[in-house]
Image (tube, rainbow, N blue to C red; front, top):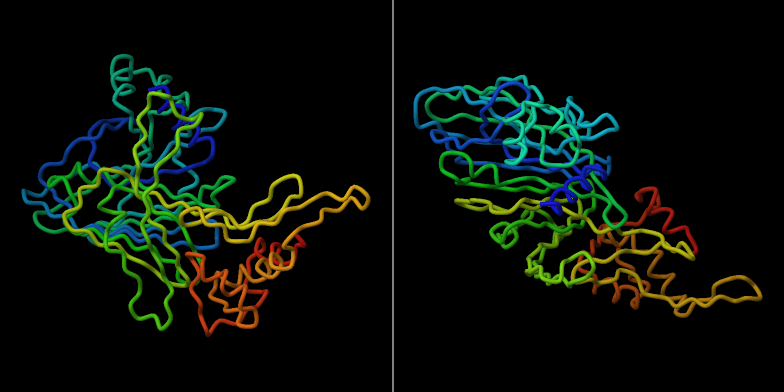
Length: 388
């Protein structure tokens, strides 16, 4: 349990925000507890995530729910991680999630921010009714953007939209977690028709998708109307190695992940009768980062640990104070074109560099693309212009 608390607390400190499918709740005041809804089924969920360069991802979640009983009102909640400050848990929700709107059958529903406690905190709170037991930012608490929804007999449409500030760290420019398992709390215990759409139209993205095997190994398909291939995907099984982060007696199981590259396009996974057993996460490896002593800007790792730029070995010239590198010419030629290669550039005048690019999993040559410096973002321009 201590390890779980440390993990959750670390996530809060880094500004990570976990989002979740809607669920039904019981309770009053500022605290809610999840319960199982027996009369209402989720027959369809369309989850669309737009991946942009703005520092935000944009979400649209469309549910079709069917109430097999009489009309009823249900207290619902959309869960997110708590946001901690020096004063403790903020009562106003997580500022990293913005513009949250819920519409049921075309009508906007107001919401309030409440807290959902883990089982052990719920028991402690019920015994003491002391708010301080949940105000120490040690984990075990999530927000629920709570609202009352009235479902008539038959079919209803629930739509939620919001934008999420992307979390990031040294290795990952963005990390997007999303809880799918709360869907199993509804009447049928599953999503009869689930569609996940990852939309990078107007942008260039490559990332890992993690979840249960049903999601990772689903039949992912991109836009079939594209003239040139603009999407790639492949699954890989990881076998984690034991290191200082694991207990000696802890069992480490292999897990499957899906690698996806999108060039101004989208990709979808469709699953029937989906009862998620794990949560969704989207993680991008960093393309550019620096390290000491030379503060070299390099491309990061991708599918199966591939390296996007040739390695160079540097030796320090004590007389001049400069570093001297082997394989410098090839390194420089590859480095100069890599950000453009993300967009499909084909260096036809340099067959050696082109051969190197064709070995990279995300590379999708586009004969119509002409490289322009203004197409690159600030980090990419720095990368192209820098000597190292």
